[in-house]
Structures are given as C-alpha cells and as structure tokens.
Image (cartoon, rainbow, N blue to C red; front, side, top):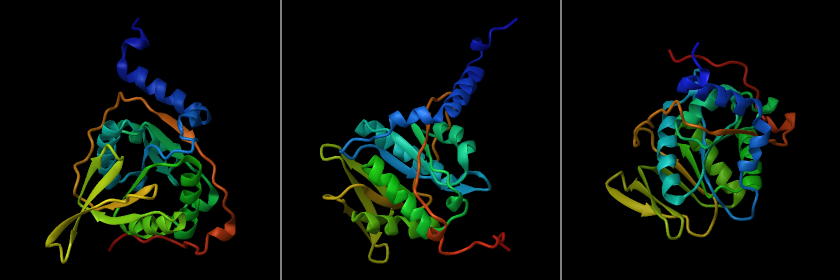
Amino acid sequence: MSNDMDNPWLAWAQSQEAALAEAASASGTLNTGNEYRNIWVYVETEGGYVAPETRKLMGKARELGDLLGARVQAVVLAGGEALAKDLIGYGADTVMLAEHPVLETFQLEAYAKALGQLVAAYKPEIFLFSASRAGEDLAPRLAARLGTGFLADATDLELDDAERLLRVTRQTFAEKILTVAVIAERKPQVVTVRPGVFREADFDRFRGGEVAKVEVDLAPEDRLTRIVGVLAPA
C-alpha cells in the first residue's frame, strides 16, 4: 500500500484544501500595520477562470515582489474560492476573498468602494490592474477615492528598490516616445498595464499559499445599476 505523503501532487492538494477550510486564520498574513507593504493584483475572470491578462500580471508581480521582499496578494471580488488554487499556482502568496451579494456582478461604484475599504485596512504599496475595460474604469476611480497617484497603460514596470518606487514606462505622443514616470509621494502606487506586454506566468502546481477572507461594508444602495443580462459577442 502506498503512502499518500509519497505523492507530491496529493500532498499539495491536501494542503490547499486545508488552507481553504481554514481561510479565516490566514488573515494574519495581511498587513495591518501603518506602513504600506505588499503588491496587490486585481483579479479578473473569463468564463469562471482567472483571465489570461491577470495571469500575466501575477507573473510580473511575483518578479517585483521577489526583488522588493514583498508578498504578492491577489484580490478577488467575484469568483470565490474556486480561483484560489490557480492564483497561488501563478504566484500569489495570499488570495484575498471579499465575498458580498453586492459584488456578485461587476458594479463600478460598489467595486471601487470595496477596494477602497480594503486598501485602507491593509495598505498595499503597489496595486496592479490590467488595462481592460473594467481595469480602466476601476483603477482611476479607486486612486481618486484614495487621493493617491495613478499611471495608465504601462508597457513596462521596473523598480527603484532603494526608494521602493515603481518605474512605469508608457508610450506617449501618439506612441512615438517612451516616458518613465513614478508615483513618488502617495501610496498605493496604482497602475494599469497594457494587455500583452508581459508573458504569462508559469504555473507551479506544488506552490503553497494562503487564503484570507476579508470583509467589506456594502449596502444594496451601493449598487447604482442593475445588470439584467450579459450577451456573448456576436
């Protein structure tokens, strides 16, 4: 008879199930101090799975996190625990799950309010979004709500690790000139990244991580529009 612990895939799967079952205890891995720390990635989904551009952002965030000595934390407002294993495999140290009836479908005002509450509570120093339709709507609204800086449509991300600043490359003047900008005096540094500029992260099925369920304070009136249906592209 074989020993289950001799099977690394089974051992990993069991460890992840245990993490999901004890998600609440993982909140101790979140930053609750006064300093801004850690790198967040806003998670988007397609067909119930982690969206390809989110997987690419996870890879870049993992690279930056390793250079900074920071944790990479994936923020999920819809999709639930089913996404956690994939996000950990793509590089997340912690998957933050904020589940609330108001967040079941994308609502700009409610999502911005929820993310604002999470940032105020857990203080990430960098927050990355894909420059998707949702990301382009949500990221600048969140930055305005927080009173922090925002840079859009990045084509590369590098670090000034001495100052813990993200050096954001963007194409400007009809995409004829490359400019580099930083958000020097405010945190978090909120950035959207142009789709397709980074490669997809390698998936590590044996990678360990944690799940933290986080609370947001929302009311039905925070949902200012009502989604009656979603049509597939023609």
